[in-house]
Length: 255
Ligand code: HEC
Image (cartoon, rainbow, N blue to C red; front, side, top):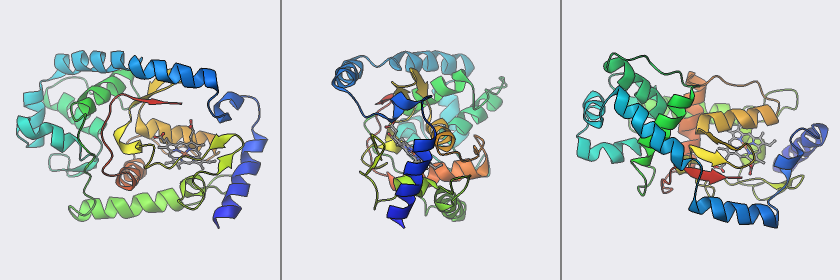
């Protein structure tokens, strides 16, 4: 099945030429030098700093911890466990959705998941857990178990004109093979759960994990699953669990 899906993917990529040809190339020496330089000075550091200000204008870490029902000193470890079931929400939510709750709790305008403000605040709040390992618990309760199962289903369901699933390109048996010039990444080795929001060099912008999923959906001609939908949160649960235990390093830096 692995082999077959790779050829399907190859056909698929051969079909969309031009537009993002650059993206499909692996890194040149010049790109590698730029990557090394950006690691020293990640453009997304500024987003984290702005996120801190935006968050501070909206609420405090004290109020945020209280809303979540954790002691402020335990907040970082709690953040490392998203997506998770939150009592106040009565469902499994992402870190960004917990920031939406904090806004509502403080009587402020609730930022949209798609907004730059949300991206920056998510990067800031997640960076509070830098150095910790992602510690999602998909067996914590029935809601998490249910989301894990749904996430796996979304990850493995073939969709779109080419009949591809996330698994067609990210399953263990084909990882490391190449799609045109681009190696297929092992989401675990790439520390997917611990490194988003990240700065994407090929897009010259900071991107969140769920938006990164949408970029893969676009590339593979899969209908885009909306941010914040149950399916999208479930996908984040599944991918985060796949790469559980990775160190959190925000902001990440990606090709
Ligand atoms: C046609 C093949 C293909 C499909 C289908 C695909 N991806 Fe990807 N994905 C890639 C490639 C290639 C990259 C690496 C691109 C790069 O290095 O810039 C990638 C990168 C990623 C990353 C970033 C990894 C990291 O942290 O560096 C995530 C997360 C991801 N994909 C998730 C998904 C999800 C979720 C789906 C299903 C909705 C999906 N992908 C479907 C080919 C695919």
